Each structure stands twice: as C-alpha cells, then as structure tokens.
Amino acid sequence: MSNMRTAIYPGSFDPVTLGHLDIIRRASVMFDRLIVAVMHNQNKKPMFSVEERMEFLRRTTVELSNVEIASFGGLLADYARQQDACAVVKGLRAVSDFEYEFQMALANRKLNPQLDTVLLMTSAEYMYLSSSVVKDIAVHGGSVAGFVPDRIMQDIVRRTRKEG
Ligand code: COA
Image 1 (spheres, rainbow, N blue to C red):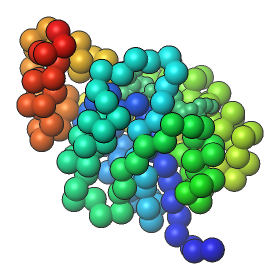
Image 2: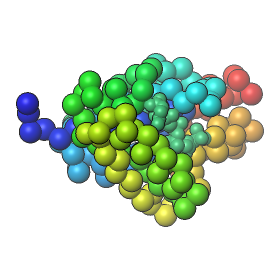
Image 3: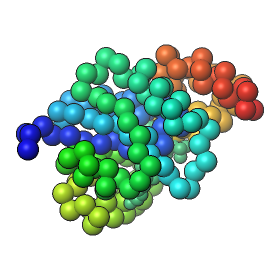
C-alpha cells in the first residue's frame, strides 16, 4: 500500500464555480492526490452533461498537477474505497450547510469506516455562491464574470442562452 494520501471532492459541479475552485486549490495542498468527482445527486436534474461538467473542471484545474477529474455514478463511500481515499472534502458556506454535511459525513463513514470528511470553510467572498445562482443569472442574460472561472464563461453563456 502506498503512503499517498488521496482525498475526493465530490459534487454535481453543474457548473464548477469560483467557490468550488477555491476549495479545490486549498484541498490540493493538503493531500498528495485530489480527485474531483462529478457524482449523481438524486435530487437534481443537471443542465450540463457529465462530460461537459468534467471538461469544465479539467480546463479550470490544468495547472494543479495533483488534481484529477473523474466521474462516478454510485455511492461515494464505494468510490472512496475503490480509489483508496482517506478523506472526502466539502466546502461549508454557512451554518445552514452544516446539518446536511454532518448527516452525509456520518452516513458515508457508516458505509466506509475508513472515510473521514474534511469540511473547509468557504472564503467569505464566495459564501453566497452556488451553481444554481450562476445558471439563474446566465439564463436571464446577466454577467457571470466573477462567479465562474474566466476560461469557461463563454461556454456557460452559450449553453444557457440555448436552453433559456
Ligand atoms: N462554492 C460555491 N458553491 C458551492 C460550494 C462552494 N464552496 N459548496 C457547495 N456549493 C454549492 C453547489 O454548487 C451546489 O449548488 P446547487 O445546489 O445550485 O447545485 C450546492 O452548493 C450544494 O452543494 P452540495 O451539497 O455539495 O451538493 P452537490 O449536488 O454538489 O453534491 C453529492 C452532492 C453529489 C456529493 C452527493 O449527492 C453524493 O455524494 N452523491 C453520490 C451518492 C451517494 O453516495 N449518496 C449518499 C451520500 S450519504
């Protein structure tokens, strides 16, 4: 077994925002290997395909050499076992996020006792941000500059105009 410490940052990433990127950057220096995993949230109907979401993430993280982009359709606890990951990383934006994250962390650890959850406090400037906010602004013709990475901005605008 290697000594490499792997963490997984799971999410819908529909699409990735500057808030997610902040968490990715900070987590990438805490672990040897960080897998950003596009996963399925059964309560959501995504706007972007899994491939599109992965491509946006790849484009956004090319400089981060220990970050990998992946997708998985099953349970996070199983994926973590498969990847030999010791931790799940999530961003915490407000107290209101806490109860849900606490519940998920306990459920994931019950399913995989090796798996701990590390909650990083979101940087203050991204506290209000979510992927839904970005999509809502874009669909209504607003500017998403300062919400999503510059590199994917045009694609978000093009795709949401088509949908809207
Ligand atoms: N900056 C900006 N936005 C953030 C953020 C941050 N740091 N952290 C979270 N958000 C946003 C997300 O974009 C998301 O926005 P949206 O609701 O508009 O899409 C929202 O906050 C909620 O994020 P999160 O709670 O992380 O939900 P998610 O859908 O992104 O991810 C999964 C949930 C996919 C990780 C979860 O459903 C999962 O693990 N699925 C796999 C199946 C499984 O194992 N289920 C059992 C778990 S116990």
